[in-house]
Image 1 (cartoon, rainbow, N blue to C red):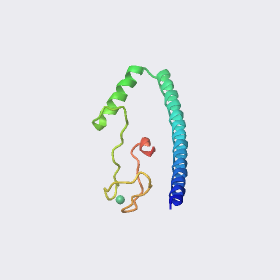
Image 2: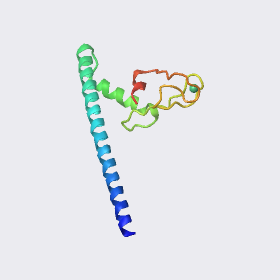
Image 3: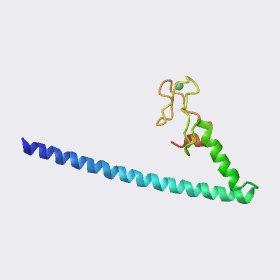
Image 4: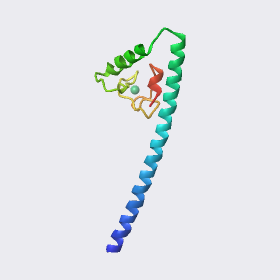
Length: 115
Ligand SMILES: [Zn+2]
């Protein structure tokens, strides 16, 4: 009986270790994606600075303004819940079509495509 408990604990431990390793790989992949996106945003911003009269102060003010659109100044770009244009039900972020009526998801902004 004790032997079976030890085997179960060992299997559970292996499973937890496997999940932890997968989670760590996912975090590393996400960190790389964020770093790439940050580099691209920074590059775009330097091009905008060179091509326009906009300033760092303008950018900081816009970040502050957009941050507050959802009612919380938390430094996060929280997206509103997307609704189906055909049936007005909530859309799943994981599916390109409405789960209720099958209508294709429409995007009002390119940033809506980032999930
Ligand atoms: Zn729908």
